[in-house]
Image (cartoon, rainbow, N blue to C red; front, top):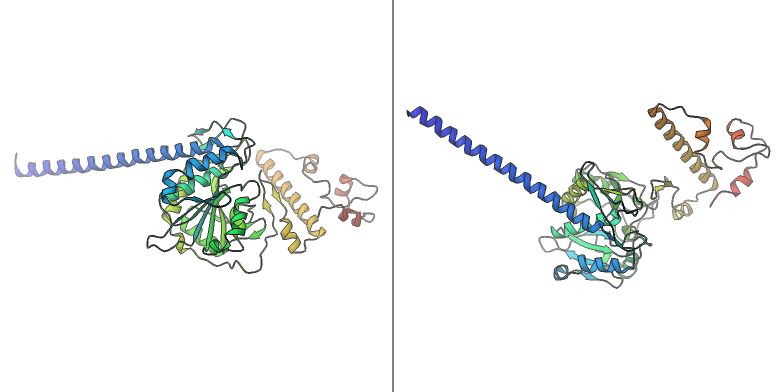
Length: 396
């Protein structure tokens, strides 16, 4: 074999070794990734199998098994006077974090027990066929906090009790541990439906600033955006003490119903993002002591139904009966527009009766003594309308 042939052979041998190394590395990474996903799927499935309404033995068992086990207690986990589980993780330099992490340990199941949970790889969703809800609210948030805690992400972790029956655990903390809460600049909950929300308002009241929301969205890099239609989670009870209080989408849909599902890929990416980013560097812009700012656009309750602004917001802003009427009419108009859009896409004809079926009895305004709803919808003659009686019938 000549010198040239020997060089060619050596080059080929080295190339082969490099390719084998690359292939082995990629294969190892692939196997590691598949194992990791399988592990996270198993963790979530175990959480979802537990049905634990507030104050039940099932919830207490869950707290003892996952939060007050020897491993967690050794790390500093403790129960406060109400039964909330708390643990603090300092920054790498030993200083205290300014971030509070929030989830809750109770679910909305009607009875305590164990349910069957399924995972469908075709749509990447968990669900249950037992006739109860899955419990993504808030098993999903609990999963995220446990994983962040395992990764030693700095912050005060609070696993709240009795959120689903009025935010009782967080109310107790706000009343009895206000000095502790005052040490934090931000309170971030993982208790929101969908995959895109950074909640800026809860129950119509602003809890976090737009600057904070935008900064967090940019750091996460997952296409989140500000959402002013939040209803309630525990961080709402801290917004008069902590500057930035929010709630983050964790990837469940149709909460509190038998149709509830949870996306696996999204929640894994979400927890990985929060493990990766530096939340201590987030913008703090809102003043917790400033006058309350309300959003009068309403908020979404469960079932995807948008309701009018919270009663406290309506009282604070002088919400009138005329405002109430306008709200109903706007809501009806949007429902009709949505119906028309959906049916046009489906190529269907829309009848007048179908449109009227969407209307609330009062949405067309006051009736004359000789007219009915359909008459008022097709005439401009309102001379005999009794507006005073109509407005008196509206809900406060």
